[in-house]
Length: 483
Image (cartoon, rainbow, N blue to C red):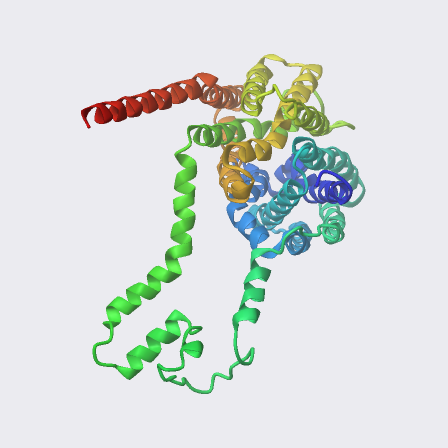
């Protein structure tokens, strides 16, 4: 823990996020090319960029379950195939609908698997320096966005849009190499189940399904391992007198099959009973709804205002990516300081992002857009704090499930944000109203989380608990005096 092989895990996870999220983080460079290639509206075309990041986060509960059951290494290998395949398929997209599927859904699912695997394996290998480790790992997305923004711009000039996507897809195959060092500390759930089945199972591993054999009730060892479905079929076939009715047996089998899912939903309900976690989910949704569109539209904003004719040598997307990487490192190191509250730090960065978004319509110069892009990028580095804060709220044992739910909220916000901004532009032919809407949503999310994280709530809770304890002691004294 916190040393030796742990830093190898950090390096492998960093490279995995760089290769997986490089192109999606630099999708703003591809967005004008898709507008010219397919001649669709800005709102419709924005679905491509919003889907790739939205699906990656919405599928977080499913991706976390895959990591829990199969481990980080197999999941990362499979994600490499998905990301590379989706990018290469996008090179042959005949229309925007196919592009939404290939780039948005396929690549998005692969990115979601990489994100869940890298964060989970990093949290398992670190305890004291978990904030710094997560900051370094998540910086991979920012470094990838910076490198891929410039690289994709150059590749489009040399090989065209299709050639660019093919080359980027080939680079994504290196994700399978990044999975090699991800050695699990504990066996994943799937392997534990298989091991338990091999230990407790008597007889051959394979039974030829030639006929259904009804075993005598005296052979308890064999009957104890029959599945509920086989027991139901045997009892229905024999029709023993006094046996449980068929309908009751069907209901019992269904309940047994649905029990794990009901337990999962019950656990989710417990999370939302926590005031802080609920406010965190709302804040993540509003922040994702408003803060992600600038990554996609910032280059188009500069071109629409006539500030530049083409994408600059160092695009605004690259500035956002570099500033985001710096923000992740600084905030990740800052949250490890004992007197710093992770929730309040996150809330302040969210409100800072909202203020920067509200200033975009009033700064009509390219230098102003560069400064605001850097500010937005730095504050967007608060994504490195999500796993740390989630662990602080629910504990390391429930990190995968709770973080998956949290990312699901973020995914819906990211998926809806860019199309809404694009529709605002199609309606008003200006980005001003869209950025006012985005900034207001982000500021509101920061205020909600800031109010929920205030220490006064805990003081009131502790005071009520002390009053209840005093009242209980007073009642006990009265009972004792009466006795």
